[in-house]
Amino acid sequence: MDILRNPEIKKSLLAHSAITIFAVTAGWLHDAYTAFCLFLSCALFILTHYLFTGMRYRKLRQLSMDLDAMLHNSAPIEFQKYREGELSILESELSKMTLRLSEQAASLAEDKQFLADSMADISHQIRSPLTSSNLILTLLMEQELLPQRRRQLLRELTQLLSRIDWLVESLLKMSKMDAGTASFKKTPVSVPDLLKQAAEPLLIPMELREQTLEIIPLKLLNQPSDSNGNHPPQPPIQFLGDFAWSTEALLNILKNCMEHTPVGGKILVSFSQNAIYTEIIIEDNGSGFDKEDLPHLFERFYKGKNASEHSVGIGLALARMIVTQQNGTLKAENRSEGGAKFVLRFYSG
Image (cartoon, rainbow, N blue to C red; front, side, top):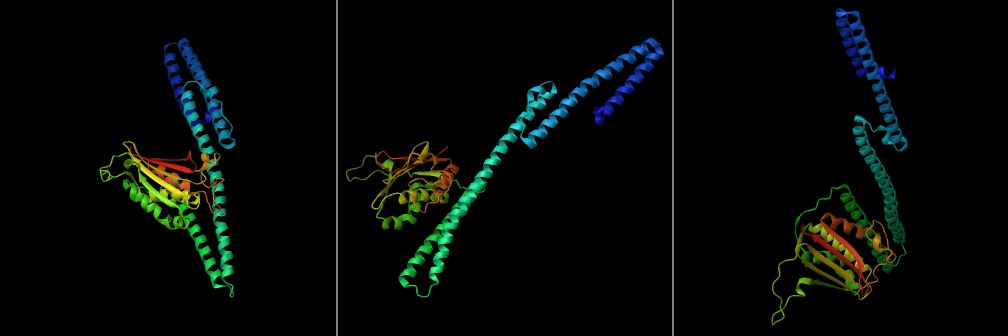
């Protein structure tokens, strides 16, 4: 019998046999009829016990086979047929385990597909400027190249290398946040200083585009002024976060606004603070967002219909990741009068 292969069953059978022998011997000392009754009772008990034990072991064996089939073939298990006695407890735990395994399998499949898509996007984004760089280097090696043309090619090569450097740096930062190894400080961050630091790399490109950047603290808009037009002193507007990471997020948003604002356009940045959160609003008078693009703006490598030719599609995704890591939110919408609007909120809780 298969049930006797289990060492515990063998030990149990030996113990029951010893008890039976002891009971029959004790009964024989009294009389033969008592010995016979004791022997019959013990035999029936042993037979009944191992009959039900055998049924239970067969169900456990079937459950083991079902689990093996599920793990190798993703076949579902009908746990209802195991609902009895102590098997119901085992069934409950196995239900949790199989559900967790299914969720993990689905998550791994999604991660695998996401990794494949990301690698394809990354290779494409890096290959394009590298190909252009190699072509420019080939042209620069020509002996009869005019100095003016050489300077133009060098400027284009510098731009391409800067683009590759920014792309690699951004991908490394996103990878650190995905892996949970990015370190975010929690220190008071002055919003005016943050905006000044974030806008500094864009001042020259914006000047070349004849664009203006205006920064207004909203708290001062509703404050009465004295006879000289001066506002009373206000407490500093700040939030707890990481200055360097926050600068990166604001820079990416401002850069997006700059690229989608026409020549001579305007970018308006306003900020305020209340007991719940510190809010930064960035607006432009550009083309705004297409309705189909709004739900996907912060997805990695997503490029909207109005995206520029050199857009990679990771700037806004990186910005949202940074803001979210600092107990904040970032959303985008279209202005009623035209243009894009980004709303950042850093919560104090």
